[in-house]
Length: 353
Ligand code: F6P
Image (tube, rainbow, N blue to C red):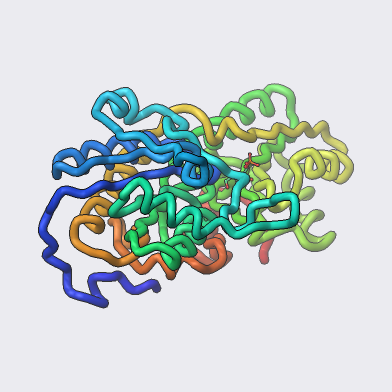
């Protein structure tokens, strides 16, 4: 358990003086980023702060001059609360601490710090997944400007955070996909395989399978490891009138699973790759509320302290912790945890593990 900052030090009473606060979104996008930006901008304005938007994540800070602009209420109209994507843009293929250049990889961390000084930022709020938050921590070691990290990713795998912005919206899309596949699977007595995102973890596939009432789910944390597992799955599917199997991309490719199941069961099997449909489109209300909660805590962290902070979701609320606590591996599904037990209780088959 990562210790909340308020257990490490008393809540600072800091005066609410005017500040220049920069915000950026980085890594793969997801629904709920605009909701977070809207809440950050409006809450900052309510305190009389100047809110600055850095475009295209860390890439915008490395631009010369930095791609930064003042954000006004006109940038965050009501429609932004639900709108997918990020109006600031994001970059998912740049590590500013290892930028590929002619002579090899170059560390541009000091340039990031210099850019923050150039734009006279007094705090920077970085919204990103575990990779981005680790970069934010590296940045914090180079700059005196407080760095505040907020967790977002449809993968829901940020260390120490029970929820991330974007997860609920992606689950809604993937669970609906399961339900849509189930009706056509039933019409044709078929096995249909749905490949979801989730490069290293299975939270999204597992939640979609449970909420969508799939027949089986394969996740990286509980992969099909031996012929007995495959036989057990094939046996189960052979007796089902039709079935939907959800596969996290990090566990196996959907097409390969469909081919194997066709061979083992002698039934028609087809695969669907859901891909970026899970990242696009509007944020569900749960993600909008989560984004607003994270933004509220981030603004409070900027107002009260100078510490580098990540806001994580713990026990149903946003909790500030040291940003350094994110410098660990992604949060996997616990094979013996509640989510797996819920799936099994709802009739979803998983390997024994
Ligand atoms: O990290 C979020 C994620 O959605 C992964 O689940 C997925 O593998 C990846 O992004 C895809 O990102 P890209 O389109 O940049 O390859």
